[in-house]
Image 1 (cartoon, helix red, strand yellow):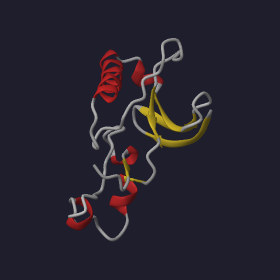
Image 2: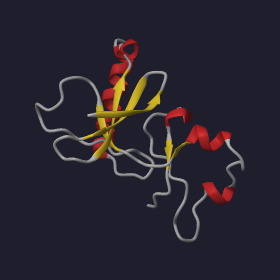
Image 3: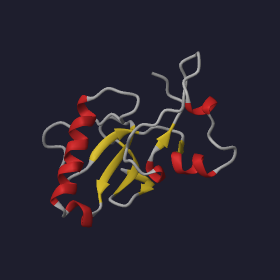
Image 4: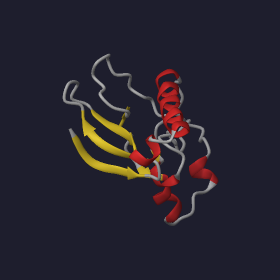
Length: 129
């Protein structure tokens, strides 16, 4: 069930949702219709989903692979990372400095999971590697 619009980007929208089968909180990423109709965008969206199911990295949002028959249109499912959007963090004071953006001795740092590139839809959190 879709709960809230998380991000409205140029080519896609992300919605916070509850997985009614597993009960977890997730993000559903849908391409906007005008983008999905463009073959190169469609291929990039599918490729991003494929990479997200196979790459384990703090810099790439994990894509949850759905069982066969569960998906009826083009979208991806990802864990919901809590935190603020990079766009919001960049636009507020104080400016992001080396202390916040670089790894600390404890290993924590600003984590930027890649939903999509624009800062308006990139979530930052305090995840550690």
